[in-house]
Amino acid sequence: METFIFLIKTSALILTGCYFLLILIYYISWERIKIFFSSQNDNKTFVSIVVAVRNEEKNILQCLQHLSRQNYPAQLFEIIIANDFSEDNSKQITEAFILSNKRSNVKLVNLSEISDKKKGSKKKCNCRSCKTGER
Image (tube, rainbow, N blue to C red; front, side, top):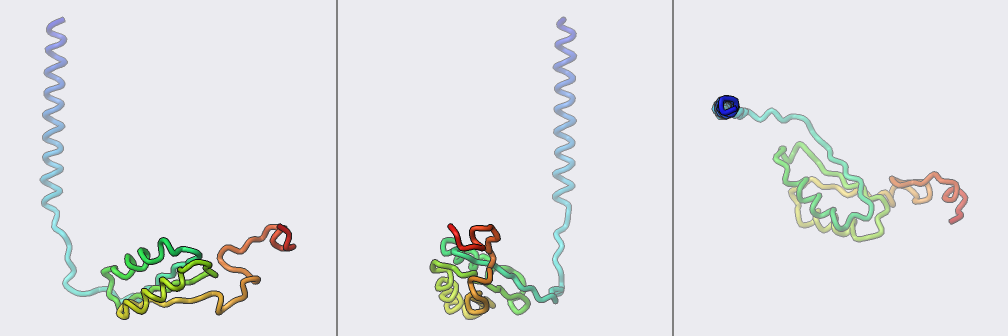
């Protein structure tokens, strides 16, 4: 019985040592990987980020701040905020952000100026009660 316990302890010790060596090899290999840095600016594609907004006054400012902090060249991207008939201060917050950040490429599109609310928007409902006006 003592021999059996000795063999189990020895096997566990050998397996632990092998595992430690494997992790050490992985760590050394990982540290040897060189980080790629481009010597030239390869960004040539213009990108438009469209954010549909409806009653998002709690989140819109943080969203705009994060989007405007991207490390993509500022002349190659724009942020379009599509205000979908918001009933809160989302429009005013976006307008204030645009005025305070002249360098950012943020544009506000109010769907209320483009389409009629009765014709539909992002959250248009197709249920029978909405079509007939019953509630």
